Amino acid sequence: MKKILIINRKVEIEDSIAELKRVAEETGEIQVSTGCFSDINLLIDGENTCIKNEKTGEDLADFDKILCITTAPFERRHIFNAYGCYCRKKGVIMADDTFANASGKLYEMWRCWEHDVVVPKTAYGTKEFLGKCLVENFGGIGVFKSIRGTKGQDNYLVHSPEEISKIVDDNPDIEFILQEFIPNDGDYRIVTLGFEPYMAIYRSSGGKDHRNNTSLGGSAKIIPLEEVDPEILEMSRVAAKATNKRFAGVDVITHRDTGKNYILEVNHTPQVVTGAFIEEKYKVLRDYFLVDGQ
Ligand SMILES: Nc1ncnc2c1ncn2[C@@H]1O[C@H](COP(=O)(O)OP(=O)(O)O)[C@@H](O)[C@H]1O
Ligand SMILES: [Mg+2]
Image (cartoon, rainbow, N blue to C red; front, side):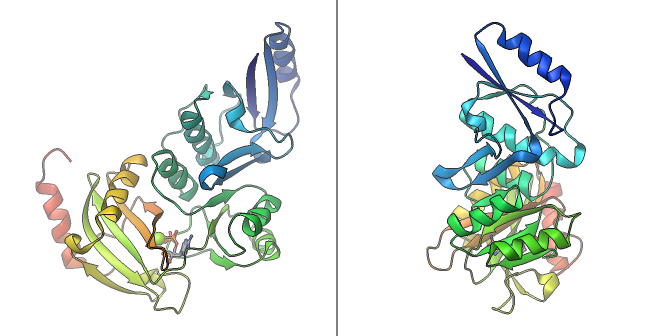
């Protein structure tokens, strides 16, 4: 029996899809399920990583082939990209697998996951699903942040499903991801050019905020690359490559207690001609211009 999932843009099943299902199932060898992307929840969490239809309980990994019957709306491409990452890893064929170049934090997290780069546990989906993940998977504390946020904006430290629910209701136009909170003393911005690290800046809020962004008053210092944990540099290379960004600012955070490193995001316009250390940044770009083949 071949199991097929048709992902639709609308919740109601259109007549044409019902007809397609009937014709396919006539063979007795095909079983067709249908679902709308707004019912599908996504979770990155080690062995528990899954993409499931909330209504049917079906996991994308349970199918042989997945067909997205309508064009993914442009602003939702990061979701279809995540399905693609998951399907490639699980050996499921996604018939239209062209969503490789999306943008935003959901896109970046799933591309990193596909390439085995460590990211914080990350959830995307309905409010109910996010609340459940916070309590059951993330230890009751999380960072709830806009998929398209920059400079620490629309980024909240949350402690309860009710807080998540209120933020969603107060910001109907913003799409959020929920992550486990990684306790830290600061984070690294690794500037990669041609997928190679060129510069490392360590930023810290000094405990004043859960966000270390310099735009919010965090302190920053340049760290010579040879003093940066080689694992952080390697993760940054892979993350830049996984997201197809030749010119990137990779944010990496280190867990204060376990020492484990996580990619937080892969910025596609690192602040290399603005912000702190501008002279050093010009020199970094000059070095990059001189290198062949990157
Ligand atoms: N999962 C997380 N755990 C701990 N801190 C986080 C987490 N996600 C974000 N932060 C904090 O919030 C800051 C901003 O988040 P980030 O994902 O880099 O978005 P942006 O810089 O685009 O606003 C990070 O530099 C970090 O200090
Ligand atoms: Mg950042």
